[in-house]
Length: 276
Image (cartoon, rainbow, N blue to C red; front, top):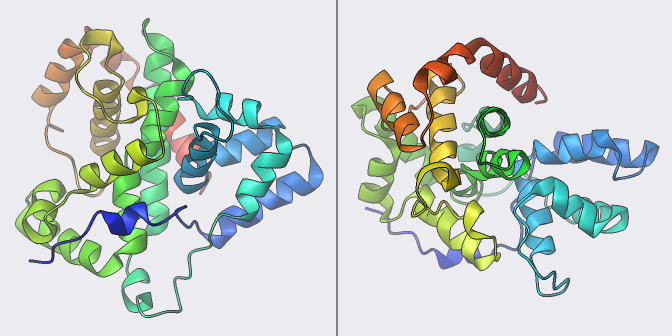
């Protein structure tokens, strides 16, 4: 068993992203204002950049009276100059060099990004359809829901790969394997990161709220639907039809209403995840 120290993740000021993502955003900033629709679109599909934008927006430096839970709101408050500065200072993932390169080249980072984007898209659309949720907040929460897993894959690629292989071979949930082998799970990693970065409760996977106020439960539902529809190779617990129905009921949503929009939700998730 390899025990990971959560401080390892807290010591990282920003998660790296793929060089092609940086290139895309910088190309847009060179042709238009950073507040142009295309810029926000690209930023909101990249969990690493999005997490950094929210981290800065919620920092004491800016001192906004309320915590910012929406990426779109954060981008609007920070302005073009700060957004571009964040992009320029986002670390680039070196997949083919360094001591961990033999492990990094085995990780399908694009698949992780696609899964995050698809979950965000589904969460945003569900929030748009059913009353009681903020669309932008739910999209952002869905996009960031796998941030702990992304952090683990980026910063500790060897333990991540070993856990992934064991989960695939044994059929155990990835969270269970991580707890057994590493002593921590990617959900716990995200919990400490979101707290350290002063994210609002809506982005901290807080499941204490009930019914339609429970953004975390809506994101869980979105992640399970994304897994059912093939966006995730390792399905989270409760992905079966009964688990999805029960989660709908806990949110006060009609499973029939969700199921009726399956084609629409799936097509939008494919469109959004196709950005990578």
